[in-house]
Image (cartoon, rainbow over all chains, first blue to last red; front, top):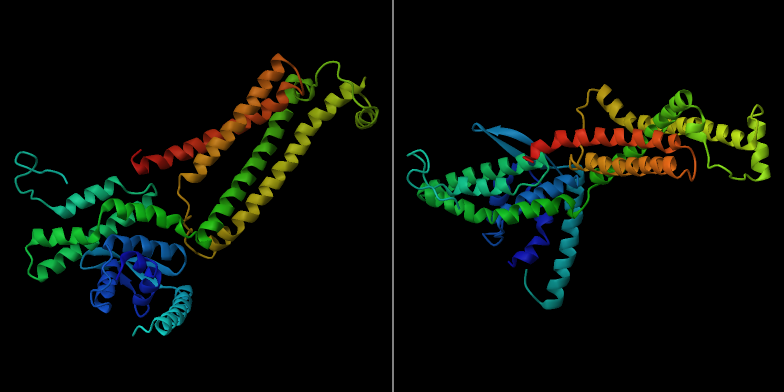
Length: 107
Length: 274
């Protein structure tokens, strides 16, 4: 997928991969890659600033956790993050349905 | 990338793209100290984990490190994105912190005006009330103003003396009133944080860069102090308006507040390697 187009949906994607359980940055990136079958291939360095931005916006919360002797920053959705995800997901679904209906593309 | 050849360090040192990347990242970190430490820690943890994953897939360790670095991307893009992301979409926390910082500085400014009222009172006592309230010689006051001045200061020998007494008194009383308003602003603004702390909450960290408020404070109060001291000097030489003490009392306090902000700024700057 085109990287610029992907960046426009990065917030939704990050919130979605953190929906079920907290994770640190590397796992977030791994989940993005695995769930997209390798289709979402952003420079991994862009993920961290995006996570920080979402945290500043109050959609994520993070804290250091110890794992195998290393400190990691684990991110989790806030209540506002869950609401934002639901709203963005609904918006995206409406948009995708519209595009598919107009272009005749298949999902 | 740094060149690490023979004689450039311990014999066990090997080419390590991860270390080189972290060196480059360190040199480009944003000014916010806590944010910078966090970015560096996250980048290092990411690179170590990505390297371990590469090794687990069968890559030689150096290749695994190189792939981890390549996937993380240009460190310039990493730090540039971080700098932009801080202000890309201002959060409510940032807006709230900025509003409170502005209100707090205004409160401190009002308290400084109140303190300058105290300094004016001291100047009245030390140098005579003409030093603060004195006006230019030969000025003619409107009849109504004269009547007011003489009514308030019935012991004055002339309208000019009554005006001088009124000016010197206003420089104290009105400024002290402003100081009380400033204390009220600071008390009201600090109340939520005090309640939060009394309930055992941890002090909340501001989302603003730690240098912002001291830098703005030092600049604003420094400029105000310079202008007021300049006006006092101008009055001393030319004598175009009130007594020199009227401006000097404010200027000295403004410069003191600017110095306090500058000291605060100096305490923060070493954390950035300045």
